[in-house]
Image (tube, rainbow, N blue to C red):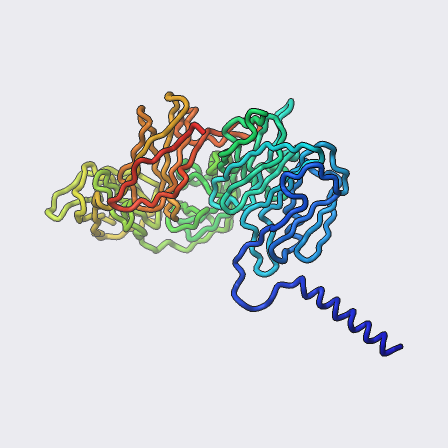
Length: 559
């Protein structure tokens, strides 16, 4: 009997281990890059008179179970929650609530689902709808999120009744997630007037968190009725609603004449100058002015300040910054940060970091010649103009003007057109560039630059189709490369548009109806609710090659 018991026990152990082994992905072989997908659902999409207390989905491979539980959205929501039961690759979801009678339910399995083998995410959400009655709501809304990384973004849908829904307070009646391609679909919708929001729900709480979640607002009315059951091209841009003022997060004194400052977020430096800063010695109750504000070679959120006054090492010194603005337009009126004084003298001579045109390979535009010059230190700008000379190979001098970028960089704008594909010389008298410590270089810097040719460029042209001929449309070409070049034109009165002298690259072509005629796309508001401006994308990425402009493009705003 003892031996028989041991045999039975061993067999049970082997069966248990075999069962466990079936849950594990196979080892070895090629790296799995195939995203998981759902191959079957119970009930099927469109089922009616479904009265069971569960649904079931079967995956194409073994799945991280927790990832699925966080990716299931059921509309209308099951308020008392769900229970989960797994059998191999099949998940059964049991309702703790009794389903409403004669109600259409929509189930979305979002793209946060990942497989066990290589942590691949589902490429797109899986959606199906069923009804507890003998009829099913067939309203459908679909569209796309236009963003560099739309995956995982949710679309919240509310059937508007008396008051406008506030997604920061009220959870949505219907939810869908988008895939890597940005597309989404909402199924099983009843008749009604819908408001939709695209939300990057970072906290996964089905609520909009201002300043944390990116959002998008619809640009057209969506009213599902017996006459119109489906809406397509309900598209969104994502943006951030930033209401938190920026802060001065760090100040380091590099030597007796330089401070390196850092903000907690990107700052609109075009609206800042040395006048926005001063040093306050709280011990001596004195104030010292900043002479130069500039980027130099600092990192993304950093800038440099320089000054000629000496500071007292033993005193308490604070850098004060006033009226600085982040990239969302939020202003901080006052901030201050204490720093330690360093008395090491500045012995470094001002150095040129960059001289180039604004075209690829540093070439200069022959029609509108601009050369950018960037130094590593601030300087007195009053003598720049006389320190610059632009000449051709014959020694002919070209007049120019100076446009300051900051206190260490400027643009040289040649006042006349230049010849195409021609070499010119730029001379800079470095003795005119004296930093706050009085350092300068007693020499003339000489370099050559080359103008572009019309054969270096491409172009794009076409027309727009609108419901109202008086609509003002802005057409945009946005490059998909790291350069992030952007070109804008207004459509002509005949609704045609033309881009010329475009730097060759791959571009997205899109446009928007400029309702407030400010030439900027209006993202709309969540609360108080305001629709965004209508926009439309050309379906294909344009590969604009040199000497090969693309024509006959069409942007249709009537859909």
